Image 1 (cartoon, rainbow, N blue to C red):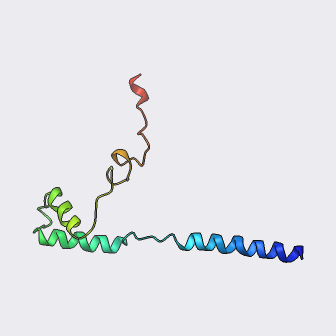
Image 2 (image 1 turned 135 degrees about the vertical axis):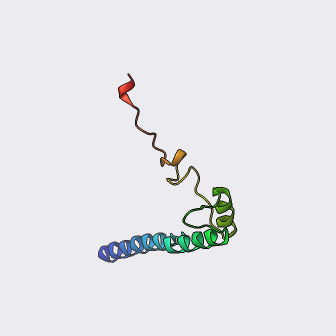
Image 3 (image 1 turned 180 degrees about the vertical axis):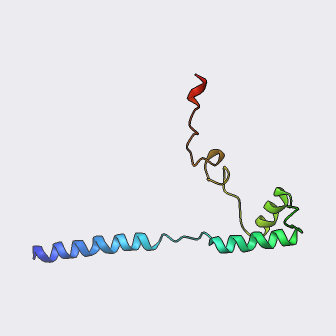
Length: 93
């Protein structure tokens, strides 16, 4: 009977872990989706190889398509550093 309890306990543990992992879905758009939306914005704003549209206009176009810029720049953290501070320049000491 102890063997049954151990096997049943392991089964419950495994099924709980699987249920927890399956509830985590990645709703982020693919890189291709973002690049397509960005190209559509550039085309609608009249961008060429020689003239680039205003960053604010591109941001507004992407927002209208449902894409929001991450907080803190490209890295996602403060100043795009992912929460890391840049190394200090020790040559000025």
